[in-house]
Length: 201
Image (cartoon, rainbow, N blue to C red; front, side, top):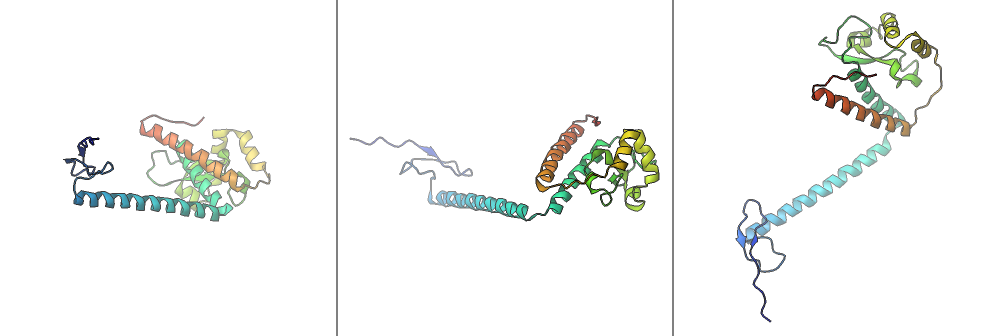
């Protein structure tokens, strides 16, 4: 039986692309030089794949080593970002600086994390503040309180002030909190990028 002649192929090296007749069915290179290039590209892909697997494993190991405090810190950072975006159209909760002020904005807790750790993630308790009021005037509470009453109502402010619940934020809750607010932040940022205004209800 006469063997059928092999059909020409195109060299798999992008920079070459020459047409050739393969000597064996699996051949994808037109010359020894191109064979070397293909072999090196394959090695590079394998190295990158191994490096990617190693990075994922390191990430998993680091995640397992995180303490509850580490998770709380990460969740807090994401929610702080959300609050600053939520209140982007507002000025400082504790002074007369307008939304157009060019300094650094913080997320200020009405009741501090140290005094009321159970309220550290409560959105009524978190509002946009200028860095001066938050960092140097401890929130400037004398102005903060009446403006918070205007913003959310006297009943909610009274609830914040009287709340003495004992709450321990466990790691699964903190992870879930971070994931939820990461998505919220992305959605708001995308709306701003599209030029759409966003105001939290």
